[in-house]
Image 1 (cartoon, rainbow, N blue to C red):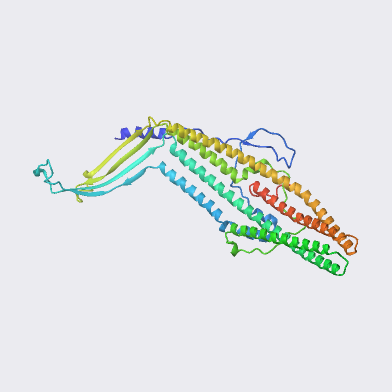
Image 2 (cartoon, rainbow, N blue to C red; image 1 turned 135 degrees about the horizontal axis):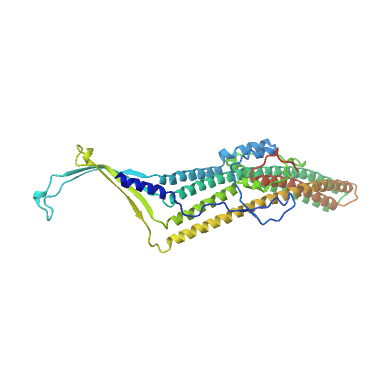
Length: 483
């Protein structure tokens, strides 16, 4: 027996090294040498072989803002956020799929022991009663082995594809984690901005109430017409409406924060913390942001791994064109009674290979292969689009931060001028030089500028957070020059 099994085993080992289908090579990705909004833009139509890596340490980038309350909220995301738990469960599911598919690399062994007794009927048709017996017993303990020889790499490619899917799932988990932490930071600064707006409007309502009282007194004293009273009351009511609207917006962002940290809104309360109207202290932007920083983005890593898995599907589909070799074996003991069940003469065995090949399937395998190739092309396009979108997000937020830095200084000057003009018109009105319409106009202008001042700061914080997110989660500010 050995002289036949040894050549067969050698042939199996030789053939199991074959693999059909394309070898995966990471496609090129669109690349510019520098970011346009930081340096002089250089046209480049080249494509670069990128090296996505979502395993780089990003750290607690939100601590760069130096806000203890923000740090406290961020720390509650990972243990409590349900969306993150979904992504983590998907990752564990993908890892389990690797073990499931890897099991096909080993043989399957099973057993089905049975005990039966049979007695022939002496009265059955066409049967001689003299041949009837009092019953026979059958005691069987078989062990079956089945193993598919991976001649063409179908099993190996399936394992590889599942491993790449698990890596993509891990990157998706990182993407979810990064997005949720960024969302907490954005919503937190939205709440603080709303608090600043509310404080401004509450102070404005108090000032307009005093202005209304002054106008009523002047009207009662005959120094002002009734129209001035109507205008002052209109201004006061309009400011109250704006204050109420800000209360709604603030509540909605507070509710969003509650959900992000895994709490029902009723169980979460964030005390008002207005933004300081001084220029905000935010993490500095590195002077040079090399395009390679985009390779830290987990969504790019995920797209690349999905692309690699799609490539394996082509090989799996093409393996169906080739014959399948299965090795099967059976061995065990079979006896007529418990006394001779496990005797050496009761042993039995059988072994042999089986080869199968589909001769005609009306184009099913070709359609499967074409589907796999189309899926790979789609994955490549998605990978490149993800890279392009990453560049856009970085460029967008860099230019926003640059422009808002200038805009903020301009707005501070405009706000100061509007407040000064308001004070001048109020003094002139009280002195009887100007009408109250001038006061109303200057009040409206001053309030609009003060509110815009706060909104610009909110936008600066938001763009800063979005830039960190676009870069894949922060940078090491100790190793890069500052702007």
